[in-house]
Image (cartoon, rainbow, N blue to C red; front, side):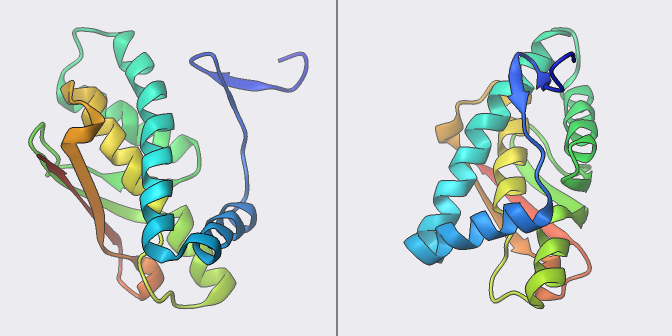
Length: 163
C-alpha cells in the first residue's frame, strides 16, 4: 500500500520476529505464571484468528471443511508461523501436527530446551480454524499441545477437543 501498511480482511497486520514474539510471551509468563499466561494467549490467539478466518471462509460459502482447513494451513504458513498438517482434524476435533513452528524453533534458538510446551499462538489459531470451519462457538473448544519441538520432540503435536 501507499503507506506500507498491510491488511487482511480489513484488519491491519503487524509482523514480528521470533525475538519480539517470544520476549512478549515470556514477559506474560513471568507476570502471570505459565498456566494463566498460556490460557490468556491461547484465548487471544483464537479470537483474533477466528475473526480473520471466518471472514476468509465466508468468501466461498460452498467450500468444504477440508478446503477451509487448506486455506488455514496456507495462511498459517504465509504469516510465518510454520508448516502444519491437519489430516486428523475433523469437525469433531482431532490433531494438528506442526512440522515447523515459529515459536518452538525460536524458543530453542534463544533459550535452549524449554521446560514446557510453548506454542500458545498455534493452539489458539488451530482452535479458531476448526471453530470457523465447522461453525462452532469458541466455548465449545479446548486445545493443548501434547508435544513440542521446544522440548526436543521432532514436531509439535496439537490436540483440539470439541465439547
